[in-house]
Length: 502
Image 1 (tube, rainbow, N blue to C red):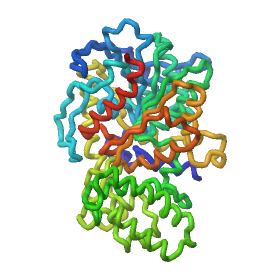
Image 2 (tube, rainbow, N blue to C red; image 1 turned 90 degrees about the vertical axis):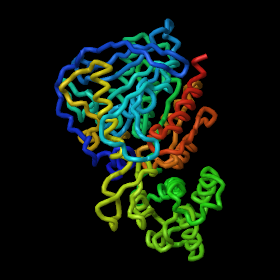
Image 3 (cartoon, helix red, strand yellow; image 1 turned 135 degrees about the vertical axis):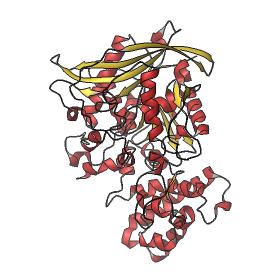
């Protein structure tokens, strides 16, 4: 059934093969108290004093019975007196089944894990956590949320994890947390934002609807979408769906450019110029050939093969054999097969060596196993040493149990839903809320949520493009692991947020 297939399109599909996957077997553990600690770092504008509050928030059902415990880490600047006007950002990652560790220790939080910027595998420990001078904490408070089944978050009482593992269910419980948080900390009048990565952008779109249209509506000022996936038709390679072949092509081209696999790279001034030409081809001759199918003329077919060869570096014979249709798994294995290498999915700058060079796909994503260990060790160390969170309970960085049990159905039936598309919730939020703005960060080398698919998704559904900020980085899905892109991303988000920080 179509709805069951959409899960192959984003962050978790390659992470699911790593050793980080954990079964959420701590169901029933009671929430711990919140732990408050005081800290100081050197921020962008000098010394920054802040308070961290980490721990569990118990949420109850309509009958007052405990239903879930949500683990979060909140950061408040210590010297701000009037917090009602200070922006508040709720941050989470995707998966589904991922904790918030990546955005927490990668870009937003006051501490950041040091890893190489040159797309090389991170060595074994020890790893270094350093002050994040680029954090937005000087201009906004932040709350990092782990969905049920990730981090220390768990179902309670008569509830099970599966009660919260679905597009709608997840957005509802996460929105419940937001409501309870802004009530407890008296932040109803603060400018409020959601920030999500990968499936977290899907989650953010549904949460916008839940928060702004639900009981006791909460108007939001905007969302930060890092490596966005809101329209799954643009990202899922399913039989009969030709759209992803079009939307992935510019990322194939960027990847071939990076690895010097193009036959005529010297003909192009720079990457953006090259990509713009590929965009035009993808939406014209290539799209036409795919739509015509078996009716495409021999001349047009040959012309498209020639152009695809020029833009991807793949051999003309191989392109003919694929009938012009190359999914991302085929591309990642084929591009550098003659060098005995495969390229990464989350970040195609990374290279891997597989057990066999004749397979159709890589063994596992080299851009995933290159960094996972560092983030995992850093998070465990940070919780204990900096935040005083000392528990025997497993902190689930990633959960295969959550991912494999996810309910992708949001509408009433699979037929009425088709491919999951949550983008229209964001365009409706713009129509209903004149202050609602959207920031989108794209990595040129992201083969999980390609930038052209995002451009496609946000060019329809009635968006007000004047309130959309679209930025690009010469990195992948987690563009912040590339040091120049991290600085640019932080500066771009700071500028987007600055309207409320004057």
